Image (cartoon, rainbow, N blue to C red; front, side):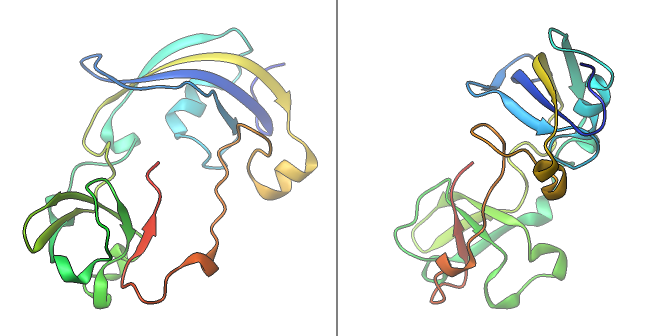
Length: 182
């Protein structure tokens, strides 16, 4: 079966930077619904369109087509007491405290990149922003999507990248919402 709109594609992948430094060796395959559902990068869909199981390719994706350029304005220094405890480098929070910043920052995830005595450095850039990415892709399976997958716009099952967001878990006492590290 060819990879066309509304097929479910299983891909073994390896992610490196442009200098071939390994960033992520996909232990679990990526399984996504093909056809513009934003389940993977458009450049990956473009490279796999019309291909079949067994197809292998390495593509390079520039920052503009991946996670954007690095924006120094998205690095914030906040007082330590405005964040929950315990706090560790690598933790992620959504939005800015007290409604500071503009509307564009509201949905951003900020990652704790440094903790000093009474200050915390938060970076709103995606960890891969500003990096040219090299994907080695190996298509292992192509199948028709189920009606339910099409209705929901994503893959269901063990390896589908579908995240549940449960608003009830939010701690109303915190100015930030904590997120697990991906």
